[in-house]
Length: 338
Image (cartoon, rainbow, N blue to C red; front, side, top):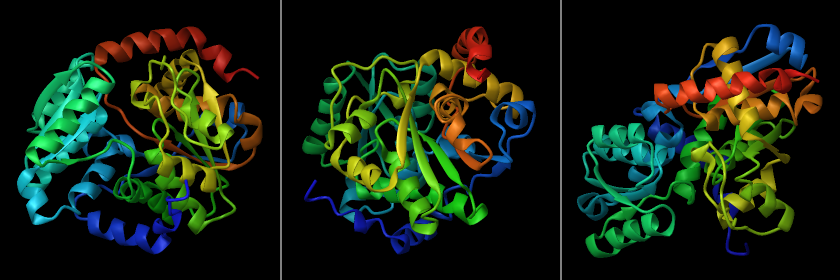
């Protein structure tokens, strides 16, 4: 903790990085979520959705990956990059490498969704499959060591967080008077950047993180006062499944996040139904977690307030989506009931 300088994520640095990435990163739309769910169930005047599901590669991950690639030296560009991921970061790293005209060898877990493996391959990366967890990261570390490739971390590092901070910067520019922003949390790379940008621009705006109950490493880390590693992860929201928090993300969350809450997989699936029916969006479980948090554990705190929800991604195949929607339908009434 003592070596972590959160002041490196200044508002000046956030704005400067946003300018650097502007030519390649989409400024994703912010749209109201309207209908009976919002007005009757939540009792709020305004729910705004920041649609990072419409970002390049289908998730916010493109921001962090490109932020890293844009800082490479000529020698690093010549050697290329590597990454380790179960899905979305692999796609984003491959896209960022292709956009920069450099090579990418991306290590993916061999149990990753075939849809996501195919998408990473379509972006032009060489895909290497390894067993989940340590074996995946070990292969990426070998590529960095033996081939001189730069390892682009899925959620850690100042360059990654400067990239994701653009989500919060854009949201505050569009809606500077929001009362609260709600963000799904996996490794902490997204909420770290968003929370810093939000608090530096509007300290009165609350920032809440939402984790699956089976992958609550940041909640436990904040409670413990130091980064915690879980013994196991158990959630359908695989994009929110890193088993640990790391020092930078933990420090930024401790400084800028007001609270963390958890939701069940059943609630996440039910929130996917809510997104489909109320917002006409087909999202992956990681994005639905934020709405599930708004609809259940955060509902009383957000009643009557103006709320921004980050819709972080939509990389999901039709078959998986259909099954999770069916599960969500079974739990939908419980999610929206007081």
